[in-house]
Amino acid sequence: MKLLTFFSLFALASLLLGETSPSPIKPVLESLVDKHIAPGVVTLVTNKDKVLDFESAGYASLVSKTPIRKDAVFWIASMSKSLTGTALMMLVDEGKVSLDDPVEKYLPEFKDQKVKDADGILRAPKHPITVREVMCHTSGMVLANEKTLRQTQSLKDNVALYARFPLRQEPGTKYEYNNCGINTGGRIIEVVSGMNYADFMQKRLFEPLGMKDTTFWPNEEQAARLAHTARFTADKKGLEEIQQDKGAEQRIIDKWSEGVHVPRSVTADMGAGIAFNYAKHYGEPAGGFFSTAADIGTFCRMLLNAGALDGKRYLSEQAVKHLSSIQTGETPVSPDSAYGVGFSIKLKEDEGPSVGSFGHRGARRTAMWIDPKNEIAMVILVERFDMTGEEQKIMYGGFMKAAVAAYGKTGK
Image 1 (cartoon, rainbow, N blue to C red):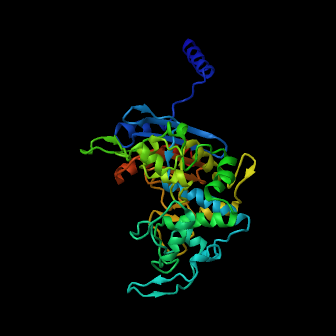
Image 2 (image 1 turned 90 degrees about the vertical axis):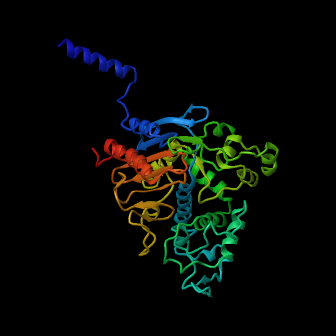
Image 3 (image 1 turned 60 degrees about the vertical axis):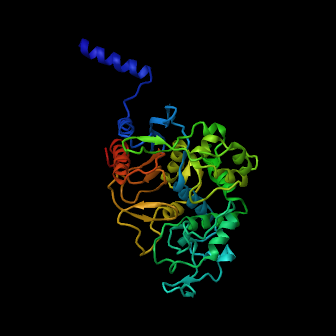
């Protein structure tokens, strides 16, 4: 009886103090830091109604040993494609764009584009590239790594440059991951809406959702929360922080930015060349956004709710189905995944999320997955170069399997 009373009092005290049970995610994150897989990591798990788990571990900076904050700012790279796809589908909902429309309907510079055969002969394609094809990587457009492609800090000018290159193959016949295609989708948003792409994203998506830290150009306060990127040390036994603006004098950065302030921590992490983006108010639809776990979690929760959140509808249910369903037709992507409109779609449950879950990863290993079957969404943010395939399996699988087991409908 006394023992029962003791535990009852302990439980009551814990409740009054606001203590909760330990997170099942926290040990996974601490293990990633201890094993030098992640310098610092922030994760979030949410259902349709609320955040279920929000954790962090490790460092924002390995140099200063600054503990990472839950509101740390990360470069999310290609996760930006999903934001662009969502924005485009808002215009589809409004009847201003159709996925089956030829791109040249909105961008006349694409008229009379040719396909270059294996023997170098140019000929007309069987059909002009469509909006759907640029958004699901089957357009056949020039790739961003083409050596003769000299991109600028103008989305309009860049997309016009893409149109001058012949198609690499017949539209719709091959999946080829393509930043130029997604950027073209971003330019269509500009033409149809009459707004600068970044302004459209801010006013139509980020502000209404309350995504206050999602931007192409972190300010000084946001930069102070930046998660700095790490890579292997020379002996591959540990991690070290990168510095990509070595030798760049402040006067040069100020010249490139045309006087617009660029936080030095941003140039250290991204390179001094980002100063041109600040100067020209330029952001790449395919991979330029910075964000936080809370912002991405809110975005994911809206999609988990089939396009609505807190009484406001952003997308129709049909639009969300297009985003999250295979848009490549019979064209294969990989044994593990397919592709929708700016979203990757899981075909295997190897990492934890159910088949049919949709989301995206970024170049420095950030990721988000919306899992309708398990009724949760998962966000993991890390900034890491040269992460091995085995390390990725440990990180993604460890986090997402733990999240599904603890909070997923099928995991309980």
